[in-house]
Image (cartoon, one colour):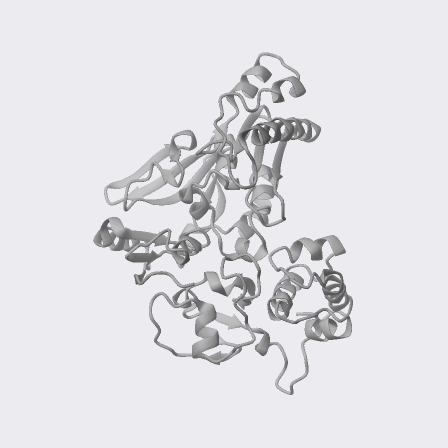
Length: 272
Length: 152
């Protein structure tokens, strides 16, 4: 399988990337690691006319402390996130979850920015940055803007980014509560999560329980109201509309959400 | 780009995948196309020393970088790489289709973690499928290569 024909253009700077994307119009796409986009293009589910390769913009690959939060460049690979000592110390949830994405080869190429803008509800990192209350920084032709993670994921493969806008950085505050857990249920090691749960303190987000990653609001409210973790976890599927597919029907996903959130809360408390 | 230490200069259509450049243009056919969907790992090569699935990398993305295929592992005298020798000694292959990718994934794994545990070898090879299910001997081969040292 090969992608439909397109024009490949390589950007040497963020400004050049924005300008190439603007010239390419609506049928232009940014190419980072390509590990979400190229498989879709090979299946002809995506048919962009122009690919703007941003993969060499090394200035967008970093993990650093910045004004009290952790700043992660959008082009940082999963491999680099998983091996970052700063993340390992400050945001172990993100480092650990990045090390669970796909397989080693995929983690060598795939980037956090690519994973977020792909906005697949079965993706691991969207739920992680949602539970961490991250802010996403996007640059477009008219400048930069910040988008809270809670407003970024709009639907299946849809984000708040405008055409031609480029995600450049993810800003993550230091968590108020230390305990964390990442639970992912798959049939085989490299599969997408059938359901997953990301837990940081008393904050919980769900993978693949709707068309976007979701905060488990009912669980968080129950915990805030003094409920025990097991009691709160029983409400993990409240207010969700999980998809049905070859792997799981709705009831099974709801069951998995309750089980995984219970395990996640227990593990997070054991690490707090 | 550089492939197995030699400069390769080629003009290919924009949509050319790295694996097709290697097989059809450069003529290195050891790297196999298996699933063609980033799952099976048969097309694994090293890009700047890191394992990647060459069915999911554009040739243009590898432009200017260093690519290593299984043909590039043996030294100039034809002496096999320690990981190849270990696959041979431990019978780490059955039909052989997954072997080039499996060897390259193992080389990358050992470069990052020269003394892995058995569990680390198994998780480190998650991205490679063996349809003969010959995993036990493959894992044994990688552990033997690590044991022998000099696996990079």
